[in-house]
Length: 221
Length: 255
Image (cartoon, rainbow over all chains, first blue to last red; front, side, top):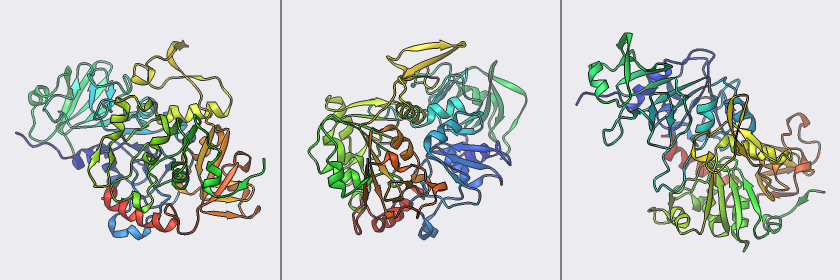
């Protein structure tokens, strides 16, 4: 078995998509790992009503934790200069305004950029949608970070979704533990591969049709 | 109506069987846990609960005052929420799937939505709308059974307003006229629920005289507030325990 990128490295590759002045929202899981490595001048928004907050509180500075400063993943953060608070009506108007870059996790992405982010939960009784449908619909750019295959080794880049749809034709870029793939009007295009991986090996783990970019290259981390 | 300043038990007695009740819930932040406990102590039945997230408390936190909405379950007929964290914890630390069991047995109804649609449905309720056409969730499970309409070539789903009978609100500080200020991310959905609800009960850490709050900073004007409850000193959901809970939470989730 070839070595795959770990979650933190995937997050760091996602961070390379952000530049000074960008506003972004980080979903649960791998996307939240981006927070510790953001370039200067990137503002993070949390859907419960804050933008521009500082690093997360750790067990080392827990005395500084403020019960009122909590992010979308219920983690406590530190304040930062220029931070602002707002209600969630404002927050979701912001999320749907096309001003934010949304980094999300994912269960499946289809050939046409359809995204499935939640299953019908562990007992199939109810979904855990949260803000994912709003974020996927309303973002300027949707970047999905997820492993290339699921726990059973099945491809997560599929011809059409088998998990419930979150939003159709919404994904722009997919960063997996073996590849970086762009979603275009002509389908999925392989842009980068993890060190040591070949195009054929990545295709063998991909159910969706996968074209290869003329300038395909090793992932720069 | 003049704002009534009273205990949580007295305020919560306005909640009647079959009422629609709404609250924000985002873990420790902005969740009216003092009012949850007062509501849990009543005998009201068949409530419909509109709640931002339904997140059971992790082991060892409920005893410290975590605002665990599962304490309301025996009073509920239906939960409407964007996020139903169904896996609750029993006192022994074992995970119990009692929400799933309640739903499967038909004792509890649920309705899924998204955070953004939830906000707009409350907003529509506040504005007296009959509903609205929403672009979120086309082709998804939240569209099931709903009217759709094409407007300017785009498909929309018809969403209905939410107009709760009672809003349970958490704010940082109030003056005696019910003007409210919030703290940090604890603002969240509280001002939106306050606008949408026919009547509001507000829990606060501090009540001050009119004039002591900066009018520029008041988020929810007192016209929306009917009952004002100051969380008593030493209450389980009070500031002292909250500090301890934050430490627990940092150790659990901030890692």
